[in-house]
Amino acid sequence: MTAERNIGDVLLDVEGVSIGFGGVKALDSVSFDVREHEIIAIIGPNGAGKSSMLNCINGFYHPQEGQITYKGVTRKQMKPHNAAAQGIARTFQNIALFKGMTTLENIMTGRNLKMKKNFLWQALYLGPAKKEEMEHRAFVENIIDFLEIEHIRKSPVGLLPYGLQKRVELGRALAAEPDLLLLDEPMAGMNLEEKQDMCRYILDVNDEFGTTIVLIEHDMAVVMDISDRVVVLDYGRKIAEGTPDEVRANQDVIDAYLGVSHD
Image 1 (spheres, rainbow, N blue to C red):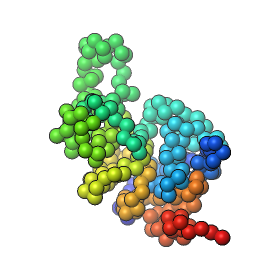
Image 2: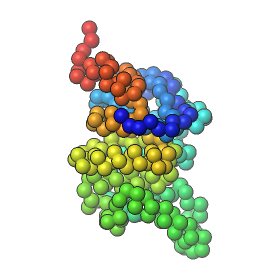
Image 3: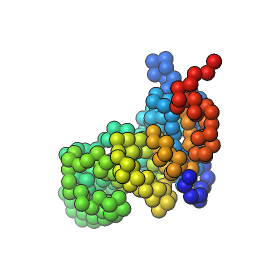
Image 4: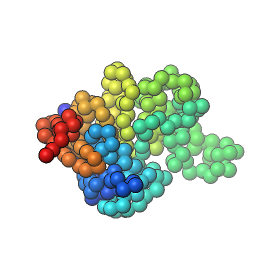
């Protein structure tokens, strides 16, 4: 269990959210909240609706029922670019980087919403635009130092090992200075050492930047070690919520993971 954090007010409130595809409900009246500075894990067997929930939070999907309140504003629909502008950043289960671009260039793309000068200024690279880019580049260099990837800053990401690509994707999300960071299986496909490194970075992001984090993760040892609270989904329904210790002892959770059927 992680050390107790300075948990704040509710940042995100998910209330009765449902969404279906082709008659199959991916989410069925799911409710939970996320408080400032928390690390919340969403877990469940394959097909439980975990990624669908992240997609609803950052606007890729629109709930057919229920509502989502973020920073005190309730909405039924939000476009992904609006979510990004309001401080929600996301990494993906399948890495979504520009493989031909360098680490530095990929992380710089995370600064796009922070750039104020118009396209013409940027194209000419004159005056204010040059000064602005230098400031954004300095910010990105700090992220590169933070994630300890200085040695690959000029390397095309398509040539990097999987674990380092995951770290670059985290860096790009951090470049947007999010208040809420959504991580979709950040440790999938990693070896033990890479997982340990990623756990450390996630905890440091939460501690040093004060970033609120919602993550999907299948490694239960990781979930139980770094999460403040855990939400458990099964067949689109929430079956449990609580501290890692509470969830670990919950019989419904045990049954879901062991595949025990109920009469």
